Each structure stands twice: as C-alpha cells, then as structure tokens.
Length: 335
Image (cartoon, rainbow, N blue to C red; front, top):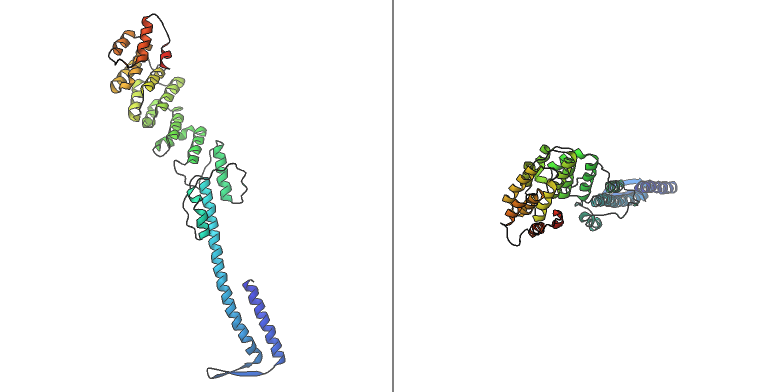
C-alpha cells in the first residue's frame, strides 16, 4: 500500500472509531502518567494507542520504502551501466564499469572484457545507445564514414581503422592527418593513407613521410609517378630507402629494378643500383638485371665473374644461352 493512502485511511479509521466511541460514551477519564493526572475524553484514550501504532507502522513502512527505493535506484543505475557496457563492446572498445549490485557485477564482467560482433542488424531494442552503436557499425561496414562523438576509440580499434579508411576514400586530403600520427595506427592504415596522399601530392611533399614507406608503398609510388608523369629521380628513391629502413630481399631488388625502368632514364637506373649494390649485396641481382636490360652484356659478365659459383645463377644461365645464339626474354628467368 502506498504511504499516502495508508496515512489517509489510518487517520480516517481513527476519526471514525473516535467519533463512534465519543457518541456512545460522552465522558472523561483520568489517567496518572508519572504521578501526573491527565484527564481526557474516553474516545481520545481509545484513539491514542491506535495513533501510536500508526506512527510505529508508518516509520517502519517509510524505512523499508526508502530501502527499496535505494535498491531500485541502484538497479536502475546498474542497468544504465550494463547498456553502456554493451554499447562499448559493440564498438569494440570494452571498458570497466563500477557496478553497485552483485547481479550486475556478474553480468557486466562479460561485456566489460569482450567484443560483441552482431551477426546481422535486425536487433530490436528500445535502448537508443545500443541502436546508435548498431547504426554506426552498419554504416562503417557499408563503407560510409560517420562522425563518432560518444566513444573515444583507440587508434587500433578495427571500427575506427575501417572508418578512417572510409574517410580516406571520400576525403583523400585527410591522409595527411593520418600520416602525421602513423606511429599510433596499424601499418595497413598508414599504407592506405600514404597511397591516398601520393595521389595528389608531389615528390617533395611525399618524401616528408619517407619513414612510413614499405616496399609495397615504394612500388605504388613508382606506378603513380608513371601515370601522373611525376618527376621522380634516383636520389628520391635512395632517400626513401634510407629513411624507411625497409628490408628488401634479392627478388625484391630485382622487382624494383624492373619497376624503375618506367620512370628513370638509363643513367639514373645505373647510378641507383650502382649505389645500392655497394650498400647491400642483396641488390646485386637488381644491378645485373639493369645491366642486361640496357644491353651492357660485357659489364654484366665482368660483374658476374666476381660472384660466387652458386650466386645469381638465373643471370648466368641467361648469358650462357645468349652465347649459344638463343635469345629468350630476360624476365623469363626471373619468375
């Protein structure tokens, strides 16, 4: 029973009983309290115990109503925290919550340490926070860039990374922001940002992010330079190789030698691999390829004579067949 109703009906009952008694017994009664005589109508003496019982029961009920109110408040607070925990788990950014009830603690431990990946987006929920999180995920997965303000996502959060990739497609100039913070983001995002940046910048600006380059990025740069007719010189390539500290194997250097011939003149190609072979013996294959591609057969033979018996066998086989008047495409030996 609600307290207001209880008070009303209790007082009403006391008034009715007091009125009935007073109408039947219209006289006073004296009662000694600690030696002090107190004279009151009989109806009042009948109502006083009822009133005292009413006060005791009222405070009893008020106390437990307050306790229940506080419990309900804690449950509501924990429910809100559980919703927040589920939303963060959906956004792949779980975080710890301080729950007030044991039941919520037991449930909250799971989403607080988990990523929740929806199988589909036919989730019927009335919680706006969960609906909003699901909308974010759906748009991001569909390649749409969305502004996310409610959640502070870490740089390596997969949803944040995908969202930034979506933005790079819509707004390539944003790549500069990503490149300036590449030490925080995953490598594949930095590569994609660099690719977007190379699509509209010149080599002088691209070299500012030489430390971000991978071998794949370098090959992309050469392809873009060919398509855009961008001026690319061998010192630019050397600078990128030096600043990035990338590790390239023998096949990689040969692949690089095959790529640069589309953007560098013969002299620059020779200078590039002449320098590289002195710095890294793995680049010797690229150097020999350059010599043979430029028909500098004698110089290639002279260099190959300085190599080990089991080194650069593909080029030695090519020259042996060429000495037998059998011409095959050089690239055939490099597959």
